[in-house]
Image (cartoon, rainbow, N blue to C red):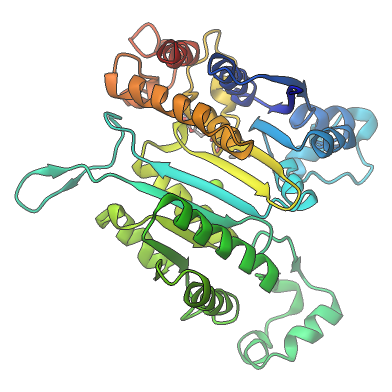
Length: 399
Ligand code: NAI
Ligand code: MG
């Protein structure tokens, strides 16, 4: 069989470091692939005025599967100032290449698993009411609609007159905001489509069925956001009744969910949400299993097979230039496991996950975040595993 080609998108900062470490692990696990590098991120914004060049889009279009490190983003004005002199004052506006990839390839199904590793010193603990401490096991997968909703980018400040006029036709806008000067109004829309909503709901139910979860929890706010969250809830009920009668449909509001999450995280399995609430609830659960060093994600379009796999952390610029890198590679390695599953290499994914679990439960190698140290170049001297040592430990377990 011809070797598969994976597009590697290292991006910026620690993204460049952890991505190479994940590839070392993939190779040690026996995953055979060629890797081609795609240009993405801050360097290309500065040099070319485009953080996501067309040649990178073409590469992903051709090879379908990409591993992504992390990118640096800066606010609009700061971004414009860093452009090469010949690109200044041409009206170039920075926009996030990762959001761009989601839209371009319609990577609408985002999956963020948050699963406790036994022995991780960062695991969430709580009081048991009898003076003792409990460590509930978290095993949650958040399905986040990745292209619509509040992050859909349909927004205005001082909206055009026709937009304003249209808004004024809504009685609540008219009553509550109609006397506010137009120039003092900013509007961000929250658009849900039936198609996008159905796709993320079905992905969540399918996952629950395939992996034996008893329930799917819809985490939105249908009692207040009646149109979008309300539509999602009604559709979830219909899909559950018709096609997944053996899976229980749970309904939580995002605010209450953030409270229940720390009281009884073990009660949740598959969670499904719109774009922003999915972002929030997945970060919340990630905090219970160790935070950014552990939080992985997959974003895919099941119709085309295009998938981009990335840790949820950013480029951590303050740690990117250390001679010996210190950040935790597990989030990136776990994202690579999701990539393995996407291409049907389930055994290798399990092998890598077990190796990570062994390293964590053994407790000999721990990166600075796992030791609750403040990040500095000295942490390795003080006993923390470097990024390389942590990866080596995982590879050792694969042998
Ligand atoms: P960040 O995630 O890069 O780092 C925040 C802090 O979390 C770090 O300073 C470090 O203490 C810790 N951390 C992050 N990754 C870690 C790891 N693997 N192991 C151990 N500790 C880790 O977020 P920050 O500092 O807010 O943003 C830095 C840059 O990254 C910004 O330009 C931001 O726009 C960008 N960003 C990019 C993302 C992406 O590429 N998907 C996501 C989030 C931020
Ligand atoms: Mg986030």
